[in-house]
Length: 169
Image (cartoon, rainbow, N blue to C red; front, side):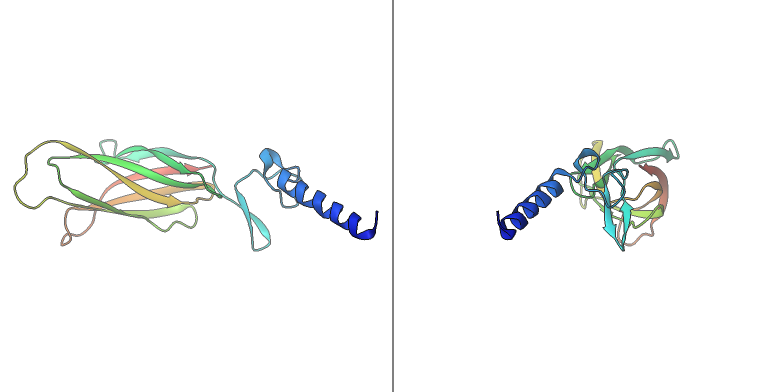
């Protein structure tokens, strides 16, 4: 076998080894750490930056908060991305509810602005559940406080209605 054939075989083995996961746990590529780094990190700035694999609701205050946490969505991406689902019952149908997602870059406190515009005109009074989705994006491990600020129309100021504490692991 010539030099060219040996080079091609070595290249083929290198590619196969990389696709197999380089010996890291769960098939994840490791960056010089012997596979000790859990999956969910990315190489940026020369170091390994870790991102959360799970997010849990730690606490909602006050307990009788108007928005109920329905759950945390996990989007299949690399790194994983998350979204918070909130639900509330309004006195009539037709409310236009919009959530402005915060730009989260590290653990800390972030505002979530929710605008609930009531329907115009006459409508029946029927309790109507509404769900809103708040994209959180990729999160680093740590504690996050989401301060929910709400207003009912474009002219009002936002009012603090509750706080949601999350833990990303």
